[in-house]
Picture 1: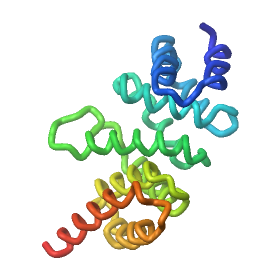
Picture 2: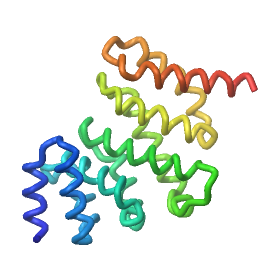
Picture 3: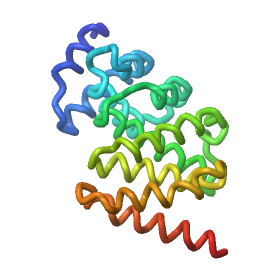
Length: 191
């Protein structure tokens, strides 16, 4: 299947997980992950749908995505819409869980300090601009919490961002996560 046909299929994609998985698998099978990442850029016209598929590609075939990790992290400084950014923030959070986890993992050799800085900026942007998108807020908050020991500004500024989001009545789905991270941050301050 030629790449223009895959792009057409992205344009016709609906939000159903099954169709996202099917199309992500096609990109992987054709060795077209780099093209899928390129489609995540807003200029492609299928940006958020490509982000949906990239999330599924990473979830199902992370090892195929690792060679393209720098290009994935470049997306964090790209003006992707809220739906696409949710997927990117989820990928970032999943990567950070492996990076900061106790087990040896290939990703520990791949994520660089500049990449973490890009994700930090994107996560704080999501905290500011999430507009009632609880999933965006949750992935951003959890990612920032994981990186808290790397950047001084995170433990200093994250509590205020969380409290501001907890006050917003649109963020009911975020409250549990926000309160949990606030509690963890306050325990660490006391220690």
